[in-house]
Length: 145
Image (tube, rainbow, N blue to C red; front, side, top):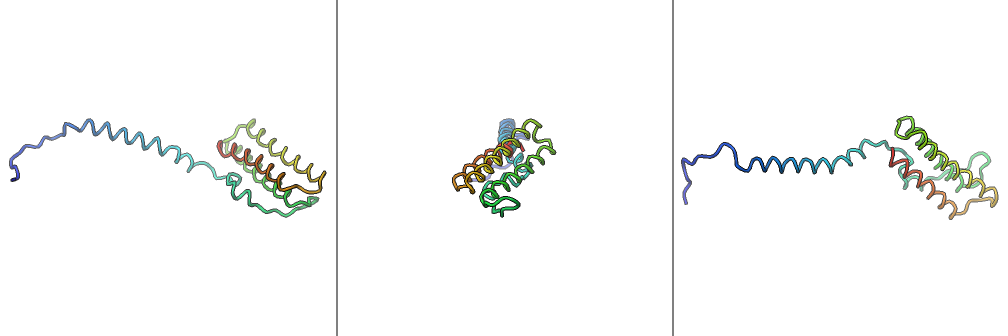
């Protein structure tokens, strides 16, 4: 088998339009896949959004507080309220959204303080319940932020 010499090569391939369409589809697909990742990369990194770290917070009781579990809830509430304030300043939350999240946190604070006052401590189950309530607030904040 010899090499054919003198064969004329066409300047453009008859498949070029199909390749262009295929390249555009590939580019569109990549763009659709990368946009959510780009949005995540530009989203602010609020401390309250890292739930694993938030669950591990250890706080010492301060002031009139005597229970370490209540101190944990209060510290988490402080972190989330600071994050809400920052998200509001960055205009990532509307005033009504920020107010609703803030009130949810205030209710958790109030309820946990009431249980400590009645029982003298916050049980592990109650702490877990309040942690879940704060997790719901964090998830709402981090979706919007």
